[in-house]
Length: 108
Image (cartoon, rainbow, N blue to C red):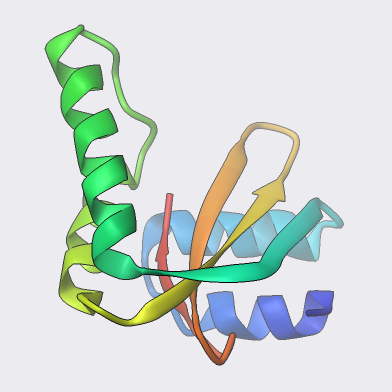
């Protein structure tokens, strides 16, 4: 997946985290798409939901977008997704991309 294709996928997501990740990507941030395996969205939801709960229980403030990403992964249910990262100057974004890589399902 090239930079332009990832920008296109992110541009279809209206969430604040996706817009911030897109801005970082357009500014030249590094990115990596993990194309070795897809995972059902619900499996990722289980993992990130648990991490979110632990953060809240221990007084750690989750980064913006995590709660929304968990909700969106829940909505995607059994859809197969790829994971990707965008690493900008202020933070690193986690992306969940559709199996066809055409759209961003969630970003935080």
